[in-house]
Amino acid sequence: MNNSIFRLHDFEKSFDGMVNKTVNTFPKTISVIFHPLLIPTWAFLVVIAQGNLHFFQIPPHAKWLIAAMVFTISAAVPAMIILLMYRLKMISALSIPIKEERAAPIIISALFFYLTYYLLKHLQIAPIFGFYMLGATTLAILSLFINLWWKISLHLTAMGGLVGAFTGLSLLVHDNYLTTVISAVLLAGVVAYSRLKLSAHNPLQVYAGFLTGFGLMYFLFEILH
Image (cartoon, rainbow, N blue to C red; front, side, top):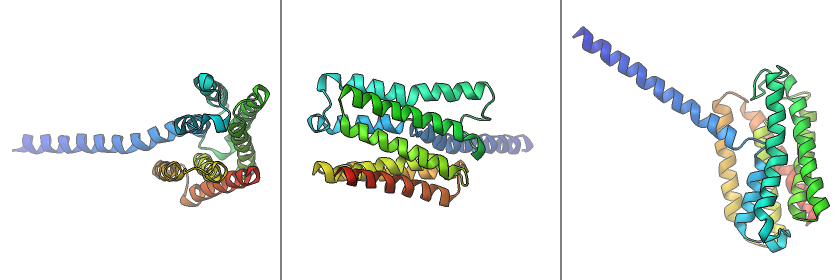
């Protein structure tokens, strides 16, 4: 009888451990997939999926090459630099939970976002997406200044910028981007849940991040419009 009770107790502990691991794995996975460095790449892939390449002045034969360039410059290279910073103990964790450690990674992100914009402009391709990258650079710089006083959510700032850009694009293109905008809003909600679940931010930091990103990017696309 006692052995059965012990086995049942061990099973309950194992089951609880599996549940807790799953619950924690999901928000971590979402935080990686929708990391601020990856949002420009996701944005470009959505533009490709929309199929309106002529309007965006994206050569159809070069779309995947441009996507690879966007990913490499705006995500892969800065991510490797941040990883090196972690290895050199310049930051305590790759998630950069300490506010005082975020300045250098944000500056690095801003520099490579701007480099992406500069190369697109120099190659005279995808000018509207290049404008988005300029907006992302501006958003990173704004986040840097806010971070001096307050730990705003960079994940939600990036997601808000994505939603703001697609909302502005719907007015610029005069096309139905409603499904894209709704999908981006829902994804932003999932990312917000994940950041809160990981205790990376409080609700105000998450909401402020989204509204800052949305407001700035929408304003910039209104100017373009």
